[in-house]
Amino acid sequence: MKIKHIVYALLIIGFGALVYYRISSNKEQAGAGGPGGGRGPGGPGGAGRGMPMRVSGVVATPREFANSLAVTGSIEANEQIEVRGQVSGQVRSISFQEGSNVRKGQVLVKIDDSELRAQLAQAQTRQTLAAENERRARLLLQKEAISREEYDVARAELKTAQAQIQLVQAQLAKTSIVAPFSGKVGLRAVSVGTFLTPETVVTNLVSTNPVKITFAVPEKYANQVKVNTELTFTVAGSPDKFTARVYAIEPNIEATTRTLQLRARADNPNGVLLPGSFANIELPLTVIPDALLIPTQAVVPVQNGKKVFIARDGKAKEVMIETSTRTEKDLLVTAGLNPGDTVLTTGVMSLKEGSPVRVALAKP
Image (spheres, helix red, strand yellow):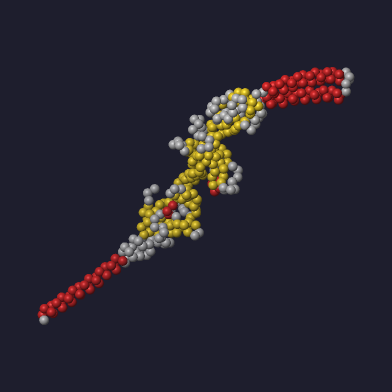
């Protein structure tokens, strides 16, 4: 009996110790979950009535912001034409080498002009005869031997002969095809002996120093582009960065693409920039001296626009903002923020108005 009583006593003592341990453990857990605990409303994860939520932030500081726009354009020759003749005839001589530079006024092709020269000699003979007839008629008119009408006929014949000479001389001048500007000629499409017509292309003449760069910007940037703006651009196959200057802007927006056409000019002394190439352009827009830029992750899209949270008196304050240009990392704020505001950049999706926060400022 004594052993049995001893066993019962040990069981009762063990059960009582277990109950005491469980009660003590529950009290400790309850104390850890209360004020100062880690998982209750006041823990580090709570943003309500407990300890402040730890977040990161930046101070909105005004700084100069030079916005730039990346667009593509095409390189064009400063001047470019298809060289053609103005009169028909057989090619007598070719005075240029393919792919060579030519100067303004240089004769490129000479068309056979023998027939026109014969016509010119005939017209000159008629002019000589008409001039002599006019001289005699004038003398007879002074002696009143002929009427005024007869003299006028002789004078008209002289004028006609003179006009005929001018016409033939103009046609003769067109038998010499000259370069209208200095540049480089391309491959020729005719040979000596070819019968040339005004529809026949002789070669291409291109002036490539300087070159033009034509490009377009979206409509919303139309008021930020100006003449004489210097831009930079690159072309495929070259690591160099080139510069150009805007010299002309289209006066209206293209209705189908909603873009504004611009044209810049770049020096090309070595002929590296070839017409027809694509150019990757970086166009600087308006420079804002006191711009407020905030990290993109700080902005929360809402139904009525965009908002951010700022820290004020140890609490999060919700502020509606207006933005403009977005860069790779930042967003330009045009309204809603003041210089010196501490903008919260982490935990913004779980913050609420009035949540206590402890801000760790990021290094500028």
